[in-house]
Image (cartoon, rainbow, N blue to C red; front, top):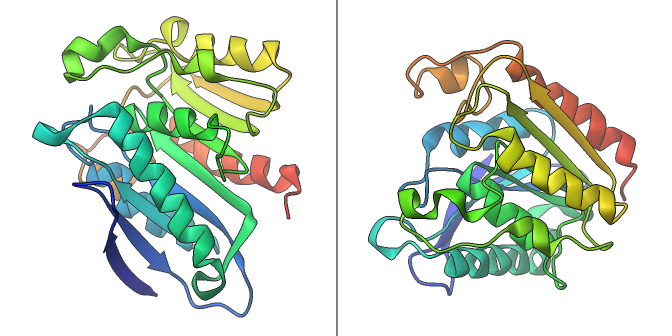
Length: 238
């Protein structure tokens, strides 16, 4: 595997590229880690990228502006630039652009949802893990965002979502439920898993992410990953 980090035109933003050598183009996923716009969480970034890579995916991590540079609108621009780079270099990166999607965790899920709804979005599918949907915790995060459910249209790509009923940061009723309602109203294909165990910020929920996440492991909630792979297979993209 070749790894490189490229700077994006958007200030304080870059793209991590995990390029697996292959004989043919592979599905690809752009990863947006969480961190309340204050950091890029390791549990949601490289470890997720490498896990997808073991299942024959090309993987990318967007490092959008955080800390003193955090800005929701600029984060969306960084993601758009990342997709532009990937699609422009798809052949050399061995990416099947018809199977290129986005996954976001927590605050990264908010940005992922927003990008997937842009008219010029190049994401063929989206996956949202315990995402921020409404601007209910803007003050806590120190940013100004929007209700991304209001962005949903009939052109929104198929979306996979998961969360936990024990999540106190982005409770189901205030976040995932609102987004699901919008998807239903616009006849957008989706799959939702709201687990009875786990919590917020649990990433893959296995030992691999647990060792950098205060040993937070939950085998039941961790089933979101194989469920996502099954769901993706059933999309029949490409």
